[in-house]
Amino acid sequence: MGRAFKGLFRLLRRNQNLLFVVVAFGTTLGLAAVSGYWLFYRAAYVIGGLVPVCFVWARGSLRKLEVNVERAADRLQVGQRAEARVRLSSATFYPKLLLEVEDLTDMPGVLPRTVLSLPAHGQRNWKLSLPCTRRGAFSVGPIRVSSGDPFGLFRFSRTYGASQPLLVLPLPEALPYFWAPPAQLPGEGTVRRRTHYVTPNAAAVRDYQPGDSFNRIHWPSTARLDRLMVKTFEMDPTSDIFLLLDLDSSVQAGEGDNSTEEYGVRIAASLAGHFLEANRLLGLLAPGSERVALEPARGAQHYHRILEALALVRADGTTPLAKALAVEERRFGRHTTLIVITPSVDEQWVAAIQALVQRGARAAVALLDPSSFGSAENALLPFSTLVASDVLTYLVRCGDDLSTALGPGGAAAQPSLNRQKAVFAGRRAGAR
Image (cartoon, rainbow, N blue to C red; front, side):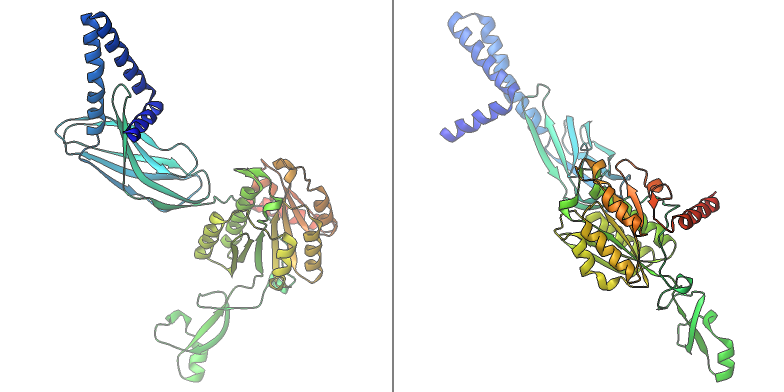
């Protein structure tokens, strides 16, 4: 009995409308008992009968209700919309009024919802849409249907369907004027790699195997050896490019979309699209709490793997950038171009970059200015040191357009600046 009273007390505390009706019922009933006036009795009967009627109304609206949900995709990009087609069917002989339908999700933003009514034995179809404003792994669903009464005394909810995962990929931006220093190889080449694709670089010949395309047959070798011979190919001569995204939590600044974490991810995604569209070999390193290390490759599938990795990374790492460079040092040689993305102002990683450049590697830096993201640190010292060391450095501030900041307007380097500006000017003229 005591537990029932406690439950009733909690219900009345949460529902102010119901509390008001109970107080009004007790007041009119007390006045009727004291005065014996018929008006108070009738008012008490009406108020007392209102509570069970509203309870049955709200509870009955969820009886024999069927909900079917169809979702369009489980992978989207920032800026797209997560859509769900919902069909609501009623199997009761009475209509259902004031049904509120919500698509439960942990994505940032307002929950998609609608309010509708169903006729007896009727159904409704409509589409729920939620904008994807933030990268990451989220869940969508289930669908929650809530019902109430016209006086707001009771509210009941029921969920339908299951929760489904949704991966929101970062949205890359076009970087028409970005330039990175090439590796120190004739023709900007690398160690050649065999490939099953047809490229302009025929490397050798071998015996014909069933399934080989006839356009690969090397007729002079076939005539000389008196058996079918086919050409083998090598990758186009380009250097390896590594993107190193600094995910050390101690150097991050800002919140939400205006944070160094989100800007760094956007820059990495944009650079990945820039190089892979040019058919370059690209790798990704992101030393967070869960280390990401993707070896250099090319193609649409590799680009999708990079976007998936960037969608999930978080700036929760404990590895300083200088240590990350030391751990991955073996990857960066004379055949490699390294692009570092960081908001760190520590001088140790700058010294590590200088040492890599002295050993023959090529490097560029996208330096996020932490002071523009609300931090007390300033990127002026590492920026000036890198420029003095002839390391191509792009300075990115909060609110900058990446296509401009990662172009000639945001780049600086010391002795070779004129040559780089000439390259930028040539690319701009070609784009026009």
